[in-house]
Amino acid sequence: MKFFITYQLSPTSFNAMLATIQSAALNGLNAFPVTIEVNSHEASEGGARFTIVGLPDSAVKESSERVQAAIRENGFQYQMRSTVVNLSPADMRKEGSGFDLPIAIAFLLSLGHVHADQIDLQRYMFVGELGLGGQVLPVRGALPIAIKARELKYEALIVPEENAREAAVVNNLKVYGVKHLQDVIGLLQGSSALLPTVVNTREEFYAAQQDFPYDFSEVKGQENVKRAFEVAAAGGHNIILIGSPGCGKSMMAKRLPSILPPLSLQESLETTQIHSIAGQLNRDSTLISQRPFRTPHHTVSDVGLAGGTRQARPGEVSLAHNGVLFLDELTEFNRAALEILRQPLEDRKITITRAQYSVEYPCSFMLVASMNPCPCGYYGDPLHKCVCTPGQISRYLSKISGPLLDRIDIHIEMQAVPFSELSQMQPGEPSATIRERVVAARKIQEERFKPFKGIHCNAQMSERMIHQYAELDSSSMDMLRMAMERLSLSARAYSRILKVARTIADLEHCEKVQSSHIAEAIGYRNLDRGDWAERGI
Ligand SMILES: Nc1ncnc2c1ncn2[C@@H]1O[C@H](COP(=O)(O)OP(=O)(O)O)[C@@H](O)[C@H]1O
Ligand SMILES: [Mg+2]
Ligand SMILES: [Zn+2]
View: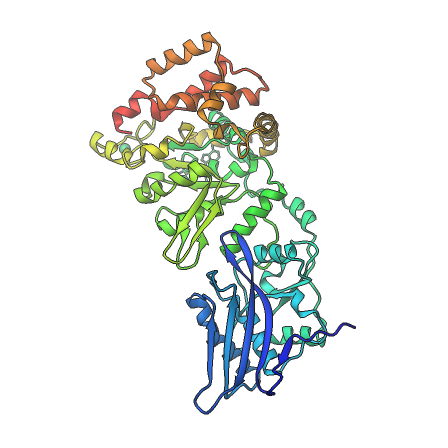
């Protein structure tokens, strides 16, 4: 058996000891290794101290209280010692409470209370928060930490039990989920029968991929709206629904994930890491297998939407990465919040800069928005009378900013299916069938955009690509020009129409965009029409 000395006795005195333990911290989406050194020596009367150095944030500083309490509670003596905890590298900011456990272990080693004779300690990485009694509490970012541990060829990762499954997604790394400081001591001393957590990542991922909570077959009628969703899903286009209360806007939006192409393992890994860092995974979670569908309330704070706080947490835009961000009742959101969406929609990543840090998170999502056509909700409704004045309507519509609307390719106005008809109608086409067509259209796009890094679907085309891939023959061009004049479409509509027409052509497996595709795409520009402009949009 190998024998490793991981704590050193000073050559001159018996009372100063140094112990080293490996841990990790987060920087954006990535983890980086942190070495924790604890040096404790006998102190004179009144000289006992416990100090943490190496650019810790305030949560890490609080660690000293928790660690000392946990150690006391578990019956270990450490009175009359002066202890210095050094976190390195010293120039990287370290946040969170995940250093409690490794600090406690290093402290116990330095005191000589615990021995790690049974394992290759420097190939073990530790993270975990400690409760005052020594219980190990969950941390954020266990998955990116596991990925880093694997990359650096660690043999094992010790994590809080609640984080064990998300960390065990990573292959070729032993992940031990622990509930209590005593579990870890047992593991180090070889007196515990703790087994590594094993997850069959791929099997679980694919098994949960098809099982959607909502299906388009439950939506009766509304064929044109479903079609708009199919086109949106096929090209990755942002979409806004306008209609009176109860007409089914939220019902439709919730069903979008069921017709999007399935998440790839790579996409899932990115999305799951973001959720791991945000502390949004529960103890049963492994890889997220369906595209996220995020529905922030309209009272969401800027930080909630974009990310940030004292610690660098991802916001809603990043939690929606590779999925859908649904802004229900768009006009209720405050303008500042909507302005925040501009950079993410454009760049598909967001940079969060605070005095203490700057991090970047990916946020490639499809935006779905819904709104009523006017404050009372019934403008244009055949069954209810709108009671709003033109002034009220125009003030209401002016709340949605032009730049945001500029990034929404598909506008669709809906009307409720009358209640009397609903009960008579047959179930609609199932999501799985729609999804097959979407997937086929996406395949064509993947092929088309192979030469372009970071471009996957028609919605992401630049002006130049639109020119190249959505070229019109002269009769289609004439039709588009005429329609733009007749409907008083604004100039911003032009390239949106071409992009969406390209997607419609892809759904029909047509190499060239034809006039029928253009005609349908024009129909998705409701908010650019002159009548909406008169109302104030
Ligand atoms: N076309 C439809 N088919 C089936 N149910 C519908 C349809 N339209 C509306 N409903 C029912 O009405 C409810 C209210 O719709 P909802 O999506 O909340 O409306 P909105 O978001 O536009 O206010 C839905 O949950 C659903 O039960
Ligand atoms: Mg709704
Ligand atoms: Zn009204």
